[in-house]
Length: 381
Figure 1 (spheres, rainbow, N blue to C red):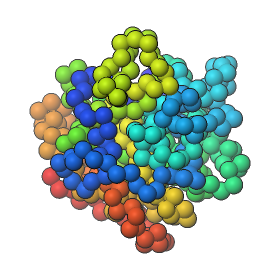
Figure 2: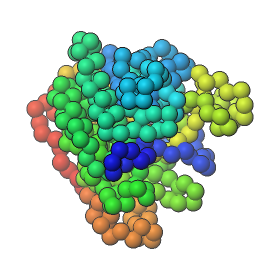
Figure 3: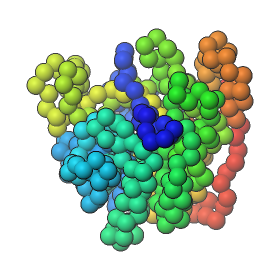
Figure 4: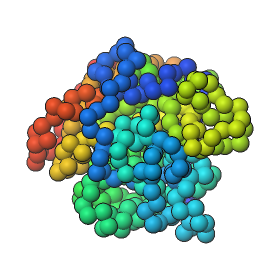
């Protein structure tokens, strides 16, 4: 999305154009330590109760049935302010509703009791700007005052190819105030080739303290997927905290003309008469992975409400993940197609950790108290 000046800000997900994935394979995968998938998902005893999650995105379709009334307007909509609209956080694009569904939607998300707040920083065309993101973060900061210390997460499934004025400062303020921030490592792609697929150079994921999330496919490859015959790898690098599933992920969506919704009960695509309160679609990207990690963080905050942002990251890097990521396809893609030698070093510096929530019940909430961020970056491939 082209925005103000030379900034490029993307909502990092794409449609899964030729999907053959089971509808809830992402839940299946994060619930077991290794492949093969067993086609089972046992929901955690934790559901994100008493945790707020702010979706800074295109909004949320509040009446979608996966939210059961848990999606709300926090009293501020940056796009309403910038474009003189009165949508009050209601989604007219779809991306934000997808993210909310993966954080806390029934049947699609991990934290099915979280309270979701829609902070619309991208418009109906999916266009965001540094100004709208700054306003969105200020919205969160101001709204927190009315929440009486409820633990909170901000999900930023978007990416810019340069630092954004004012955003870093506000993110640091929120983290200092006890808010966890998850952000997408980015999907690589044509607009970000100059980053050498390094998420340390992608913002806001590259900012200090942010939980930086990359993507795997159904076979645990560090590969976002294949679109229009072109393979795309996730951004990676030493700043990535954890990987999570992100290819062919089913989530809630809004109704779009000539774009059928998925019918979960019949496992077919509707061709007309879609019920917008039930619409679901498959999408891919680090957006999806990031929302799943935000959901996992919400589960952790329910169990351990007093932990810091650094402690959350340490737990994601250890007890809430496993070294299962495969990098061979990424190296092969670089060698055969990208011809970017510097990307080899980026891949080689990436932490091999794939989200796994199975050990959540056994975590000792005090195990990382006062300890610095774990810096182990070794990978196995």
